[in-house]
Image 1: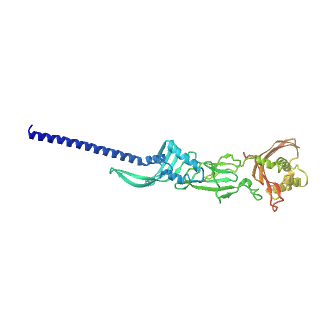
Image 2 (image 1 turned 135 degrees about the vertical axis):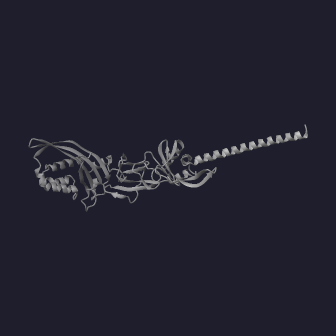
Image 3 (image 1 turned 60 degrees about the horizontal axis):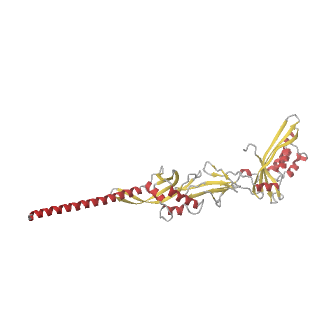
Amino acid sequence: MSARSAHAKKKISAFWIFYLILLLAIAAALLVIRSRTKDAVTYYEKMVPENYVVDLVRDAAPGDGALGDWMEANVFRAGVGDAAARSKRFYETAKTAKLEASAEPGTSSTSNPVYLVSADGKPFLRLVLQEGEQHTLLSILTVCDWTVDSCLLRAADASDARIKTDENTLGFRAQLPDGFRLLVDGVPCEVPAGAEEVDLLQFRYVAPYIEVPKARRFSVGGLRFEPVVTALNNAGQPVDIAVEADGTLVVPDEFVATKEAEELAASVADPLEIARLWSKFMTNDVGGAYHGRNTVRKQCMLLPGSNLYELATNWASSVDITFVSHHSITGWANESVTNYVKYNDDFFSCDVYLEKNMHLTTGADRTDVFDNRMFFVNIRDESIAAPGWYLADMFSLAGSE
């Protein structure tokens, strides 16, 4: 082989080596570009708010420097309701449920977008993001660093009539009778000092003489969670809550009977005997001066100066009492004393029902029904009356069901 031929062959061999190296370099560059492009696209997709929110919630944990810390500081702090239960529900749901996020309808802010997160199809969170620094990837993809601005823990069984106390917090207004309890997430809610007092209509004729239950009207606000509000009556039993037109949650002042109240009543009076005497008084069957007025005042334990006392006085001196049809009482039927309610140590009530059967001189028969709630009070102030127990008021229950 000539020197010229060997030189040409050597040049060809160097070319192919260079070509191979070039191809390898191009392939390596393409792999790097592909990897970086894939990473950039993955990161871009991860930072899309809907995806970012789901990952943020699923990865939440105490001390994470993100949502977990925010929830610990704002939602799980001690206060209204059961903070520990809220914390447990949040983390368990975040880790186990199928999470989905969507923009809240009606919101359009790009710097503070609002997202609703559902867990297994049920309301879970309302999350407000805060826009941070923007980055450009591959010269064409713009992504934003997000942080948590605020969050609201939602509840599928949250109470009606929630009110916004500012843009991102909730609260409620409530009216609660004395002796009842309001629960938030199953935990008693303290009635704040200075709550508005509301007089209860059923005690309006007793209130001038003794301390009676009132209702307290108050607001609770600044909550970072949707409250589940329930109520217990004076006997610790669950009761329904009504919602007024303005959204106030009203616990009805429907006190229920207790054994303690029945025992107290037994030591004070015989409501059935009082009811019989009053019924006889209404049909002019007592006898004595002033149609038995003084007998009724004493044996019915009427409180001097009370509306009931004045009613008895006016009835005895009115001409109407003389117009009662002539008759004879033939018997009493369906007598009962029920619903003993103790409001405090000096105040209780009971419901009395009886039927008074009469035969009129005209030959007809007639039945008068006594169906009333009696309110008994223990007067301690001598300026009101001599200390002791009295019947201060009663009102008809007929047609109240």
